[in-house]
Length: 356
Length: 249
Image (cartoon, rainbow over all chains, first blue to last red; front, side):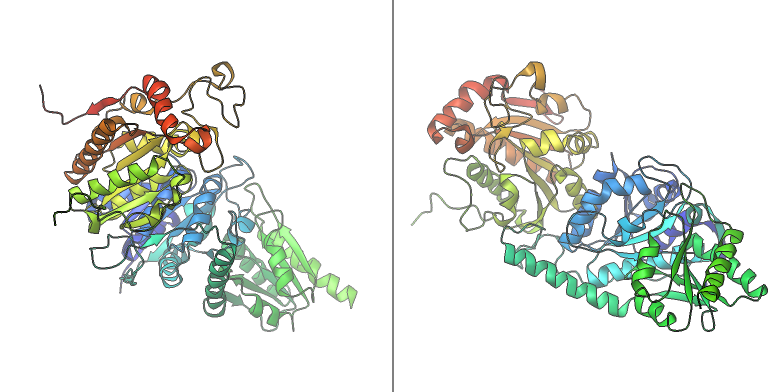
């Protein structure tokens, strides 16, 4: 049993990646994720790995593409403006079916935005972010422990399905320190017969590309990829429910917003309001069936997020508009307070009573 | 019966899509010969770029990955760092390498990344139908410089070998041409040397190959070769721009 250590979220990502066999990191400095790079810069040379500070986010993601194509576990990390720059490369990775981990420790936007926490890259992450028909698997940690565990899971899922994975954290998750237990996963053993390692004069050459000038072929590639997405949606959905069974009002949130929401739910319960919390852990695939099941008993939903209202669209789609969904959000680097979430829970509950 | 001429083993036996008279066919052959010369076919990984040569991934009998426009040296960096024993090369045109991919080109050279860059300069964007390239000559007429490249408004061509030779990183930089038999032989020697240097872990090498685009230049293949000799080579002088390991004379 590994012992608990006190770590920053960003450092936990880096150490967890190393623990599951990642020996290649390519990145570019940006706040608030720089600790990932700093940790890798220290550790990788000592364990025979590669840390390389690229000339840009664009170069970094393309180095990730090269290393992923060569068959190794590889990752990059950045924050919102940097992820936009990586968008082209992420689309190519999806088109080339390359597994890798991309970490986004979100900050406020748009544009250069700010350096405080945000969740306003939700659309970008869950809809793909670049051009073309594709998805990433998107995992959202809500503790330093999950920063570590979901990093390992991201690598495993990426390898299993040949899909790039995004760990969607935020500045709070990246910067906060919590006790964390780091397990050795010993992963990275996936067979990769498609990898570019040289033919060894024993097989035909492997080609990794995303180009087809034949429309019916390109359509077939996309349809085949979406069959894999369907398997992911069927098998890999993750979420957490808290006091949902008898809840009249269910707060939906991920990451730091879910932690605030949990406090607000406890306060609501103390005040006699039957509130619960639903936390998606996979943002794509979104746990829509599980959330829809809750719409059978809950009377109202509140989406708590650090954006102008992005998660709320998936909540509305999940409950198929059978229940009202209200928004409780702050943006630009602001975080909703437990009192603000409690007020939103009360308002949602009161509206239902009044409406019925 | 003695074989006096054969296809290099690393060159795939498939029809190429290049236009008649295009220099890519010659240059592909020279690259394949270089791979054969160090016996590296089974451990080579190539990086194709965006442009006419994007389909080069079909033409070499080696593992190949297609990079986004301009990003080939970054992709090659990732491949090489993952498996340093592989021979890794990029094959890029002038728009890819000297316009959209300038940063990746300069920084892979500055790092002395142990890869080989084959840079085909034909002074025009071929695949998209003949637009002005970063290496189009002053006064050169293209689809997007219909009155000739006006250096007062769009500036001057980028001289890649001259520029990169100012860096400390590169091991070997040479500019060659494929407009004549003599120049093709010299080009072949340079490309072989670049691959040998990589095999010997000497670091970054770039061979710029002055080539032709009869289709988009609007010339016969023969006239295009002459145009390259009379117009391109004077602007882009052939020769070795950097050789860290040259024997002292």
